[in-house]
Length: 246
Image (cartoon, rainbow, N blue to C red; front, side, top):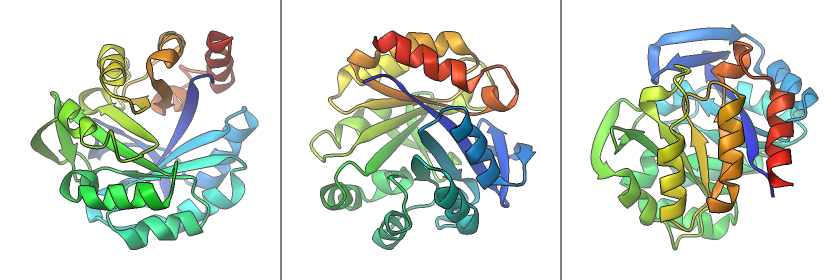
């Protein structure tokens, strides 16, 4: 299996945006038709998509639901969704609407039993977000930083049956500083759960390096701003990821 490249669609007020370091006041708008953006990614060859309801992450409940529904209806591949999903009803609602994977962050820290039960009832459908700020888990849209270290958080779910861990270095996200490859690989080697890299991807070199660590447990990589700014070509990234697995 090759590294999965997840183009990202972050939603704020129904628009496609990217934030800098998760700061809602530092948003760059890239479009007002999220479903159309999803189709552009599909046309470039993407079979997986990562969608985040940014408003929902801060509100603690779905805010951009209509935009998410439109994306799921039009995108022919697998949609992975995060942002404000903190209870059983929310998890079930998105699976019923066709989302392939649900990403749980804040609730994973505050209510781990919710994750365990959902992972049992929806095999292969639950992803735990371990968002890191200086090595500690950040929650509530990255507005709060806990006293829990990332590795400790990850190990809490080793026997839970979660599909993957989504690891984001918050300090790099949206800044094109480069993905924290070393920390991502270290985490993947330390746990038995596949890890998805996120935060700061700036070019094809990182896609290649992460793809080489697919066997270490790095399952995928999420990229957003580099695609929107034209620094990374999605078709090329998908080809590089596939070639590394050959």
